[in-house]
Image 1 (spheres, helix red, strand yellow):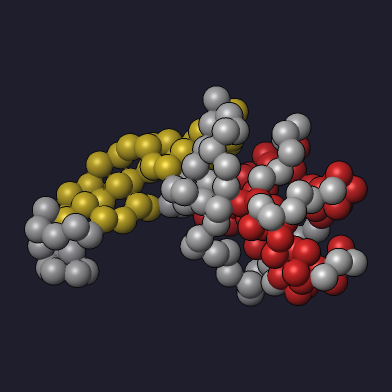
Image 2 (tube, one colour; image 1 turned 30 degrees about the horizontal axis):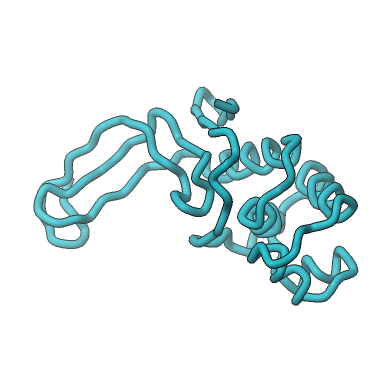
Length: 157
């Protein structure tokens, strides 16, 4: 396999990968294909069944007992396929309120949080709205390990 950046040799191994890094620091994918170029700094990860993974993460967050962090709120909103304005419209709040929830400037109230969790568990995500590359999230939550055995399974570590 050749590097798409420099044409160098790409090595592949199976390992663990912190999914979305800073965005969801407590989610680790276990046993995925990790590719690294021997010549440059290019690296990539093979994540099978991405839609199933996002659904598993959303279900795990929706069923968790801790208060949702700003990054988790943002992940669930994006999972559902809602823009900030869509989210505000569904929840009967301003877009500024949504922004404050997602930036940690305001805490989401218990009723709105329950509605978000219920939405994540019961609504079909809008497929044409992409999940973001960047989230912010507190790192004081228990870790989550994701494994693929036919479908994604999450365990709280």
